[in-house]
Length: 455
Image 1 (cartoon, rainbow, N blue to C red):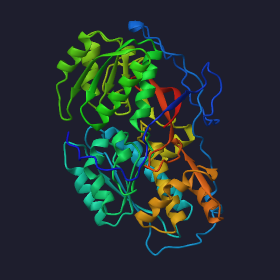
Image 2 (cartoon, rainbow, N blue to C red):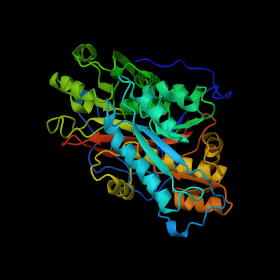
Image 3 (cartoon, one colour):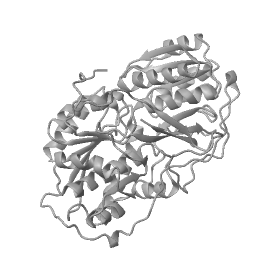
Image 4 (cartoon, rainbow, N blue to C red):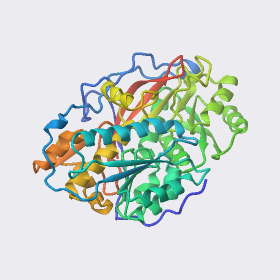
């Protein structure tokens, strides 16, 4: 996979990165994490018996709540614009991450609908244009970005893949347009020279890696093997998983790489299994459809398999029942609550996964609110207000309630469907939830618990 070179940081920041991860509702007692009345625990067991793996039982979890706001009560805009806010999306409908496209696009469309139901931004309805990002095997993202920029968008939501974003970030931010990813997790973007125009609602893989690595050792894994996609996402996540495993006293005994576009994985599977790890971290995209049967066919039990956001999907039509029963994995963000799912299903009744829907919805709302705060639909001006609307003011979690506060002269602190959103100067979330999920007999997954961490 080809990546653009990383260039100088936009500000002097992050001389050191420290993380505090607090497990919600554990024997450690209370924590300072946000709480809500939403249900976030699974009813199924999270334990497995293979190779000494026995994970902690599910527990109640906190997370983002969903609030209802009366759109009809929103006061009119105090400043209006001649140029409507236009948002593009660069999300996958083809390629190895195509399964993430539907929930992300639904999150964007739900955000746009609610904003326009509340009267739009600066007196005009928000316009949205969707384009496919493809994956790194194609040039679709570059072509789509050129088309979006040519249509005068102020912000582009996407890409989902960190590797894809690296191919277009300079093109987008160089045009004075915001790039706002709901799913990029590569730590490389923290120090990218993006002119203050790159933002994301997904936390860096530093956090997901720490959570997953710690969780595997909590489940009793003393040795870990990894099969890793050789790109910015895969190798970055693997590095942070290994650090967490080793910090907890475990050892990574095998790590095998593969490249995007590869279709044969027997060599990687055989080498990892030869090391006889207690647990295997599968850091892939949809290549998991080929790798999982190879592992289970050689005696690996699903309870030994730990997956990540790139491959947490509905496999009910891909595998025989029970193939993944007891396998677990992580997805950044809090669990999608039932009322939010209902709203998403009204947008797209065919949805089966909800990964990054909340992050996409939040990206739309944050851009719209920052546009209101800036009294402008220009990307550069909107970017200057994104951090301000995410911190320090009165809490609110949807466009109608937040814009009402703004138009009444109040400072706001937007916390959304993905959890609390507070940006660093680098455009990264400084705090986030990581959800842990377990696969059921039908090869779909359910939530087990959430961990809250600060970066």
